[in-house]
Image (cartoon, rainbow, N blue to C red; front, side):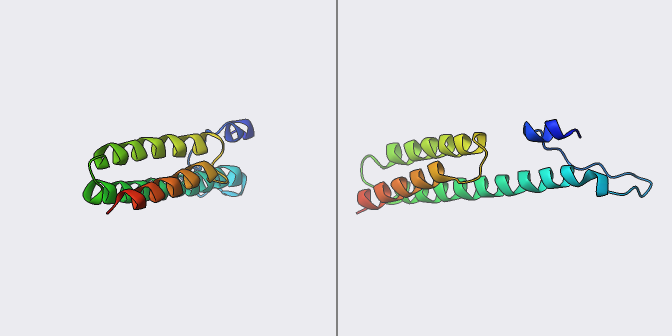
Length: 110
């Protein structure tokens, strides 16, 4: 894999030779694979937290609970996608939106 492909976000798995070739030349591919795995893991964890808050809203919120739950899920997915598109290093947008969604959920429950 060429270095310019890694910079553009085309992370693929490192190619291992069937004849016992050295993977030292594939270090960039290994690093790109690891970075993509970490970004995907963080994104999936944040999406699971959005789903957890939405399930609480669906069950315990009042009349607008279904609307608030689905709106929070949609905003959460968009925020995670934006954070992934911008590099997925800080996760401020999706984390901040999750906190706001959790506070709205806490205010609507009861």
